[in-house]
Image (cartoon, rainbow, N blue to C red; front, top):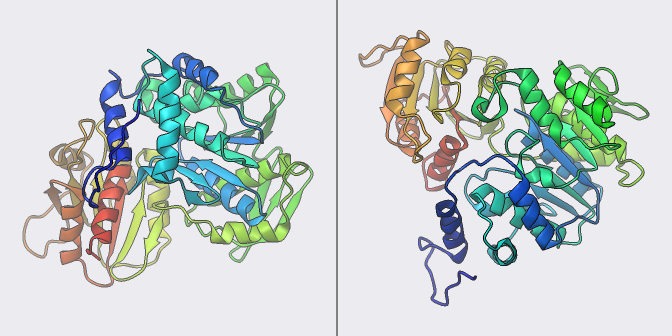
Length: 442
């Protein structure tokens, strides 16, 4: 089956790739359908395998940053690197990176057609289908190392049909409780599902659940724990990594800002240490890779005034880190918060972490059935004790908007040049503001 078009299209018209994505979204009866059996069958039909080391990264928070640091350092070392990362902000192509460049529509469509040709009567979710297609694309690209970001959990995630040479779990916290369980022990077990017997398993959570440790030991994985097998130290100028047999001293701080980035960087360096004979990376390549790494919306501070911060904090653990990072920024007279979230998230927990740090709340609807409404978000704010004043010039306000772009425009109209605007919550919230900025709102 092929979805193509010979007629010219303007920039606003659906492309063949758009048509594919719309078809995939409409097909499966569930958005999330946990389990790997169906994906495993299609993978086997495709003959999908990698002829190079594979690094897989799971975690509640920090997995995207860890993937980006690994990619940056390995690219600096001159390797041919593939990266699967998600979700995207402006274009689906962002999810598939080959040597730091997004895949083209044509490359993606060719892999979509390959999956379609092999799936037969097997029904796949949007995520399962696109995951197989992107892994097919990367497996066909003559790469020297592949980095795969897990979507949800680990054990039952579609990415886990691949056996990773290095498996990293960054952090474990309460999120996606409907699918992963409602305790860190249950969630830790799910994430440990990406570990493999005899292979390196890295966990950079400072307090790993016992379930993760037990599972790694039970299957015979080579478990590296923060504080036991690798660690970091540092001061305000530089930091050092120490592993089982390798030290990296006098490192510059990663260009990704935030309190937890040294945990993520340490996990990435542990992975490189485990691969040091297959993929050696020099001290200078590590330094350069860390200080030049880029990843959108992980405490991303945009240039200009008022200051704009983009952060995809969408669970209490990430919100606590965002709050800490905001506290470390120095004084701003007023902070405007643009917030939209999915209704299955712990919205109460997120808002509790940021209560008192935001003066003017701009809560927004999002264009997805799963999303909480602006009205629901306002109610949650009131429940955590945010008291809004309605008068002009009030010190604290809550306003509701139909989309992130209008929320952003309103915040811009009210913010002084020394104030700051924090955009956080769902990726869809941040993407909506990114699009607004691209179209001329600054």
